[in-house]
Length: 233
Image (tube, rainbow, N blue to C red; front, side, top):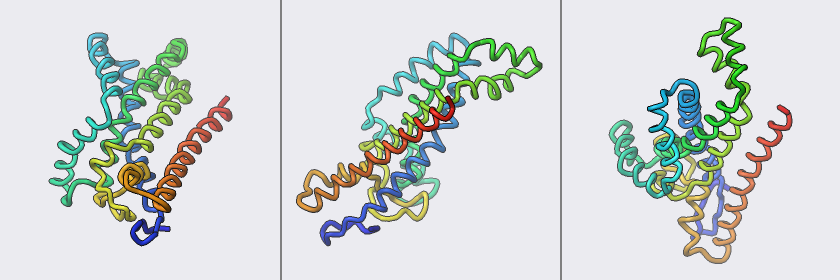
């Protein structure tokens, strides 16, 4: 169903499923290109002095609690969206941008390590054949590291779809179908954490079913990655 009204015994979780998909897709759009380009820069372009600063900074970002990210989103991203697009600022766009930032450390770290793992003779061979540095990296090195990069992206997606506290603080928490990027949204995880504390009976069972749906989503993502990896091998 598409209506979540526990006081009327209506437990349709479709709006939350769509909300989770939209927010995760937005996070991928924001986080994957930036994360991949950062990984390429750190692996192939970054001066050693700057790398000694960037690498610990990325590792530090990975260790920041999600509640701190949520506070950052509430204090920085929400006002920016509010001033730019109007509304409350707590919306699908804000959640996507915040989650995109949160998945950056995972994508950067995994992608960088896999780019560095590609044998150097791939790069040297491309240069010897007349390719430019950029072409050698983007047409030879990255395809050779694609499965490792994809693994980093999958880990990032898992982080995004399973994130709770940061999303609760900035998504608006409206259990309705989002009609635009500035509309409030509620994800599966947010729905569980907001209502499990006082739920009972059928309401509680519906929230448990929501958790099962979330688990199935993550399982499908991981199985899809395994299938892609097996096909590539």
